[in-house]
Amino acid sequence: MDGSNDFRWPEDGLTRIPDWIYTSEEIFARERDRIFLGPTWNFIALEAEIPEPGDFKRSYVGDVPVIVTRDKDGTIHAFENRCAHRGLEFCRALRGNASEFICPYHQWMYGLDGRLMAVPFRRGDRGKGGMPADFDMSDHGPRRLNIATRHGVVFASFSDAVEPLEDYLGPETLEHFDVVFANRKLKVLGFYRNRLNGNWKLYHENLKDPYHATLLHVYLATFRLMVAGQKSAMFVDASGRHATAASAKDDSAEIGEDTAAEMKNAFRDDMALEDAEFIRFVPEFDSPWTVTMQTIWPNLIVQRELNTLGIRHIVPRGPHALDMYWTMFGYEDDDADMTRHRLKQGNLMGPSGYLGVDDNEAIRFVQDGLRRSVSDEGIVMLDPENEGGTDTLISEASIRALYRHYREVMGL
Amino acid sequence: MSTNLSSAEARDLRFEIEEFNTEYARALDALEVERWPDFFTEDGFYRVTARENADAGMPVGLVWCEGRAMLRDRAAAIRKTMVYAPRWMRHMISNVRVNGIDADGAIEAEASYLILETLMEDETRIFQAGQYRDLFVRTGEGLKLRSRDCIYDSHLIPNDMVYPA
Image 1 (cartoon, each protein chain N blue to C red):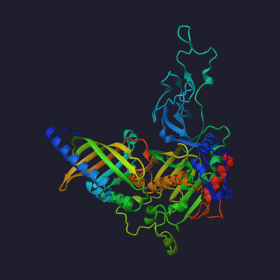
Image 2: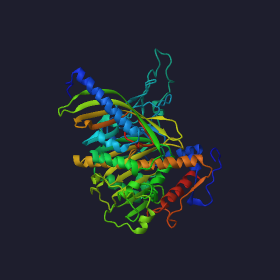
Image 3: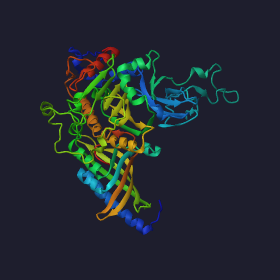
Image 4: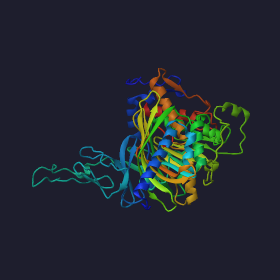
């Protein structure tokens, strides 16, 4: 199918997903134009990463490198990391503090707002050379992005047609987003970065697929962090693109015989934690859910797994890989014991997490299967009564809701 | 940190730590993760983190284990619960340097490490380059790690990190 213009979604509709959406370069290019550069809000930074005037960080919208800055007056800007002159990706430091940016090649200088401020030898040298007399610096400069923030989370959009951020996220997303961000100032605890050998959409699907959580993650089941029968739900916005997977840890919940039988390969009866203290939940949120995992289209995951908190920024690297940039955080008013608790609980997630490894491997296995086999579609049929939110783990209803939206945007 | 060691003492210690690291690598390269906690003291600390974090004073770890119980729990998870494709790892440890003895009598040392990863049907690749920042103490069973901080240069973890550095 790769290389063909004739992309036809399978006739059975949303219960089928064609392999070529994960493997085609042409589809990836269309996603870049219509999704990442289109009318979407893309995560680019936490304000806590750039607290001071002059602070900046390298970031990405889709696979497009951008610079995020805080100006002298506190305003946040984002612009393409590309010199208007010869196209250099001029900011190479991951983060730092600067009063301006100077492209090393010919020393064109940009302000913290991305505007071109100076061009050396613009008038030439002793009357010779130089730019044309009508060269206007305000006509040249990196593309600047629209910015929206909510409770310290910074989003950017290349599109002027994008709706306001709150409308884009929708009330179903905002409710759970605000539980993490609204009331307390964040304190960044550090970063992880890994490259996953899978299509970027598989990461969204994985978190919209609660079915796997009780089966793939032996750790979750064995230590009763999540099992079928515990209270759980999936909340999906009206567009279908965002979702919040929520569950409530309940140590007293009885696991019925039928549930246990279905999960028999996910329990390890021969295992007990020697130090179980680290998976304890310290209540701190105004929410009935102990875990919420939010997939915010197209490039953000918000992780609230018990007391370990973080965002994951998806940077797609072609159809077959994505880079995941994780920022782990707590709150400024955490005491030393709470920070330590969060750091210990961090063992659950991330590139070496008890749950994280399972997901990363599963996504790679999926990509291997899609790119190397001769069969050409997968099935997402669970929970046929719903397309969007649901209250059972045994569901793929929110994956179907995502692809309803995706097909509209992509014209598929 | 004082450099309160004679050159002969530093040389002997360096040799002893090189032997320790050889045994440490040998256990991990044999994928005998259950032996890994025994290289630490009962209250031993182990962390794996990016140089980006270490340079910025950020505490987070990909792996954060306080005490042998947590180390044993991680070893058990690697063996029994984590789901991953089979792989072989090879730890190359070199450039051992003894930096001195701290106020508690612990030996501060460092070493460079390189971890090679071999996935089945795939080429061997450099998985991670980094530095151990260690505190050793002498016990009845020889040297043990009171702390091993693994600070990796490698900017991106390839897919995931199953076995310890």
